[in-house]
Length: 461
Ligand SMILES: [Zn+2]
Image (cartoon, rainbow, N blue to C red; front, side, top):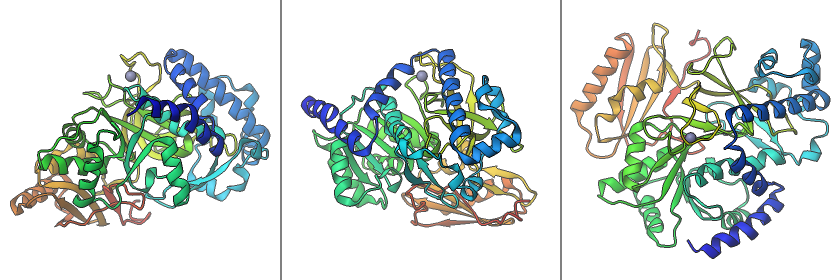
């Protein structure tokens, strides 16, 4: 990387992007680099002040909240403590869909809103407006995580992913945007040996990026390709996102690229972003979350708030979105907050566990819900090196099909052993079929699917 190129990008290209996109990424980036070193108490105060301002705005300018607050007797002007927030009901995607127009602030045009949507990879997509401030946090939350590990703003970075991390613009505009931002796109959907070979060649060049931001499954597939050929492609750091970073994935990626792997998590609509720092990515899978742009609560199935360490649904409030406030939004993800302080000195709170989408579970005939993370802790699929990925499809309450994608010669004895072990754990009343095939099970956004359920709402009762 030529220092001149980095300086040019930081001082000229990125301000141009900010102007065109109507964002304030550079000033937000400076702010984030400062606020992460505030104490926990100072960050909590900052969150409270931002939340209070948002609630007052919602009460004055958003029809849905004006009505709701009047109905429940909630006065945003008197809001002084986070505990009072639980008086506002948790917001579901369904409520937003039903009341879409009423969620938009009457003065939204002054916040430069842009329409976005979720990928819908785990259900019906959700449309929402995000404004200038929310868009400014998008990349800057990532930059902060990258720069804590040596990345310098303006430096180029490789982005290995499917459409999930791809800019939504027409091809010529996208090319210019990627150039200005210094993003080297490595399109991972589809991804096969031939394409990986090309990517390996690109990343071997002296002038290529030394950092990579990528979807977990794509990086894992890349790493297996390299390790099988005894190749090492040294990078300075890899940041993963979008999917669960299982220990076996991390180990493989670390070995193939000879660098540390830092996991990140992002929920675009709620401006919630979390990242591992160097003190947390070893034995302790904790992630700092962006307290400046989101407020995170964990709730159980009865919408009761859980304490640190307890696993529940991620309920997040985007503190930056004034065009369409979504207060106490149910992200659909599961995890737990941690009460730990981090040795890095950042006051940003830690998320102790992220289990991914809450619907990613199978149900046994006796009604037990088995979340995908069970298969993570139960190293069944990772005992056998020929298995590159797994995917479980629940066909009915009494029948699942386990799809194993081989990367090597499948051993029928191993398949039988897996079946037996699963039968022991999940009960003999569940019919288990195992299919070994090259078919990749990925979502439309290019993410690896782990669980797909064909059960109806009635089956889940
Ligand atoms: Zn830390």
